[in-house]
Length: 472
Image (cartoon, rainbow, N blue to C red):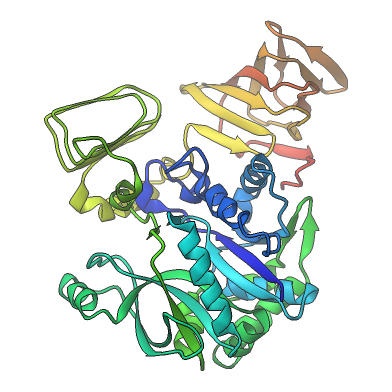
């Protein structure tokens, strides 16, 4: 009996703006420790040698960051499935089930979001073993978190009759929407309700069999997307056309609410979905004034607050119950009781066609990253870092020229028909319309300053002729 962890790494984490952004969402950020939340999820599983290598399901825009973060913790994934577009959890899990059954018709899936905190790993494994016992009856198993407070931000699961074959496992009586405060208090006091964790354990074949009668098109389309998938470097791209036709739906709505045999395992595991700044504060270490402080912060007469400085010194004086988050290009100041409204800020940025919800000033690329330094009407200055052995695409710009000044390392520069090595304190010029490429042939990161000048300086003024990362 082989059990395959399936790590869902979609989502943008908009309620953790300005730290979480669509180009680098919360699962790829080190919010609680020195590791990203995705890395924490995978490292927990490394303690269970009986599990198979993890399978990831992700959007294509995060693929290189996921691969790099897995390399940093020495994890070799079974594969990384790339969704052409976000379709919620049901199609993602269905695609993973089809993919696993091609390799192992008896595959068991342990489905986990990539962005949750679990403090008690031993208790989590114990709950997992109880879930394995429930599998014997052909059940779809979900893990219900034992509630500790009347939280209104979670969905709930109402338990039914207990199972005879193992302890603290129950038939699922109902999935319940997020309640109001009075209902949440009622759920907590009666003891029959769990928080819905979004974690599952089931046979891939049983999941597809339960999904088929209620969502036959989803089963067919995700099957087509897997059959016609193709590999792109170290990633597996689901076929675009079939997957795009899938209905966007959560696993709860699509299958769990209709399942002939669904089981909930009671899990008291120190779980938190880190769905807001106040939720993050609950899992961070706090000082004697109940402040969660990160970065270069001076807090004077400050209490019950989260203050996080990413780039600059932040001072607070005489405040309480605030969330203050500083990044290079945005600052959030919110009362703890209103952090759920952060999504409205993101909606405002989208409506006004701004970019602060998409990228930080540091923008990651498969070859490294660049940072915005300064910009004006006809110039743009960046700090570019190219990882050892990596190279940018062979490209051309219609509207801008570029000056490159090497600060650290050695650059191999192709411009038109000429290739030149540029060392520290040396520079080169790329005229408008010339094909060019930048490479790092060394064993250390290459750092340079790029000064763009021209009538249009947008990132979309790139014509690629050759790219080792197969970008369009």
